[in-house]
Structure formats: structure tokens, C-alpha cells
Length: 485
Image (cartoon, rainbow, N blue to C red; front, side, top):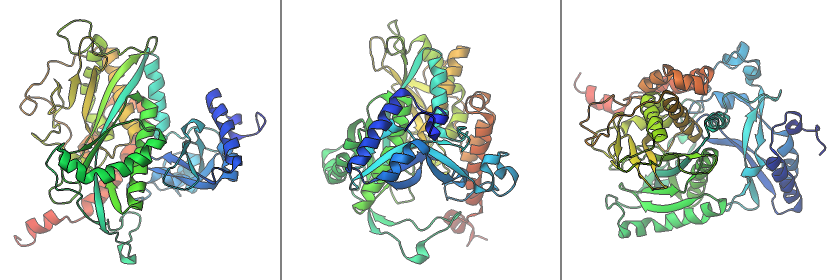
């Protein structure tokens, strides 16, 4: 295709590397080795959505984009549209969002993968644009890209390693009767499941051997995707796994996380298992799952870890300490992005290997921010233990970058290490998603970084979920009040 003929060319959307990758892909599509291609984008929840195209159509669509309805950008976790899209401006005061109009997802050609569990199927991660070439302001991948560029202005890059807990259960009944189906605002019945192991023998080889067939099923299908897998572990609770990933940059790690979650769920379901990244399933005796984010900054000129302290006895460099101070200063607002579900706040409790207050400590698993490493250690880093595995990684990482940047700019002091994490007097983490959204709304640093329009948009979607939750009569209420009154 000649320059200027396509949507990508007209709006100058790609780098030279992306153009080169696209040219190679078109040749591959024409060779017949790939028959269909999935074009996917990560929505506001970090869930992949998109369309599957024939290889012939994909060769065109890689330059022209794929049209999707803009209501996908307005949905809460029940797939209910949370904005009045048929009013003027579509509830966004934006003509591009009015009337359930289309937007385009445009592939990033460098993300191409061949899916191992589906025959002759390729996959591309996409970015969101309006038909006029403007980036969709609610694209969370683009928001992280903005944060990465602002961090680069200080001479640093974000480096992170992922430590992800999740559950895998064996499906007894998929609950696919018509009466089990749901509708927007009322999800269908989840599957009936049973355990793979009884748990609580943390890291024992016997327990791992029980779940090894499932771990190996995942490994064989995830490794060909190029995901930087490091370890496969039997976590503390029944049927609970932990996978860890090697260090990557911000965008690569976020892309890896959304692909990992979607791929794992697909592979498991095809083989009779249910994988869930829900924080605390309502299943007897199971444990909460967390997502621990190990992060540091690299100096762009030499690639060295900017958190390594020069003096003995120090935990972090000056840059690292100020970055840590920023994470603490904005922890409450950022929790709405690291823990974006109502369910996730049931994990914050004392003496539970999960944090309940805004503190840091040296190699202490009870604190929110665990500092590891020291002088001469290239792996010096901060582990944020606050996140849940359902978090949108683009927003989670962006919240960390903007918080850390503010700490660096203001030279914030994190104070002393908290060595008794559940006794230290400190500000508590939000107890509910509502509390976290209120903190996010009032956090000027995060509003400036992400944009006030995005923060208000995000809060409205999450408040739609909260409103539905508040109208639901729970089993606790029935048990508590039905006989008493």
C-alpha cells in the first residue's frame, strides 16, 4: 500500500518498527499459514474484546482498523452500559461517543502472536481511535503510554516483575441451561466447581504434584506466546496457584498480563477447568489472591537500576526513597486502580499477609510496600502488595508511575520502616471501593496524570457496579435479619 492510502498512514499512527512488522505480517497472512486473526483491545477493565477476521481481511484491517461499537467503552463489569449513549454527546459530552457510534481498534503489529491452543489462529493487540484519527481518551493502554513518556522526561524507565495469584477449579457443571443465562446488569450463573487440592501445604512438593498437570497445561500453551514466565507455585490456599514473570518494561508487562489472563482462562476452560482472577471467590476455605507488583526505575543512559543505594545501611537511593514517598502519598487514590472491584477490598485485613494500612517496610510481607535489595544489589526494588489480580494493568502501572513521579518532584520522605505492620499507627487503606473512588476523585496528582475526564469516567463506571451491589440482598443480610426481626 502506498503512503497516504490508509487510516494508519493518514494519521501517522505507527513507528518505523511497526510498519516493518506490518509488512511482514501481510506476507505471512498471504502465505496461508494463518487462516484467522483475532484483533483485540483491552477495555477499561483490562478485559480483551474484539473481532476475529479471515487472514485476507486481516491484511487490509491491519492498516485500516476494525470497527467496534463505542458502547464497549461505557460498560461496567456486568456488561451493562453505564452512560446514556443515545443522548446528546452520549453521556460523555463527546459527539464521537453519541448514538453508539463506531470507533476503530488499530493493531500494534509488534504484538502479533500465534495462539497455540487454536488451529492456524493469530492474535493482535490493538489501540483505540475515533474515525477522525483522534486517540480514544478512555484507552487505558494509551494512558500508560503517556505515563511512560512523562517518566522518560526524567531520564528513567519503569521496570517491573509480576507475581500473580489465581485459582483453578475443576468444572462439575458449566451451568449452561437457558435459565442459567443472565443479561446486562445481572450476570449468569457461574459454573459449579470442585477443588484440585485441599491447600494450606504452602509450597509442598506433594501439593504441587497434584496440580502439576494443570500447571503444565498452562506452561505448554503460554510459553509459545513469549510470556516471560519464571516460576509456577502451589500457593497457600486450596486450588490456588502463583505464577511469576521476569522483569519487563511497563507496556510489555501490561500487555503480557492481559494476554496471560485471557489465554489462561481460554486454555483451562477448553480442558474442563475454570480459572479465575477474582480476588476472593465465595467458596468455602479458599484464600484471597493478590497481585504483587515488583517495580524499580532504570536510568535511560546506562540501563542501571536507579534504586540501588550508594551507601551501606541504606535501603534505597535518594531517587528510590522519593519514589517510595510518592507511592505512600497517593496510595489511597491509587487503590481504586490497583484494587478495582468490590470483592478486592475483602482482602485488606490485619495479620493476613495482605496490607491494611499505608506503610512500607524492609523485607516485611505485612506492609503495603516491601523494600528489597540494597547496596550493590541490581535487583533492588519496591514490591507493592496492595493489588488484586483482576486489576487493569495499564491503570495499575500508570498509577504507580504518576505517584512516584510526584514523590520525585516534591522530594517526599517515606519516613521510617514499619517493622510491626499491623500495629504501626498509619493511615488506613480504603475499606471499600466507594472509599477508594472518593480518594481517587480528590487526588490531584492522579487526576492531573490520568486526566480529570478519565477519572470521572472511570468512577462513574465503578459506581454503576456499586449501585447494583447495594440493591442486592445478600445471604448475610438474610441470615442476620430474617429471623431476628
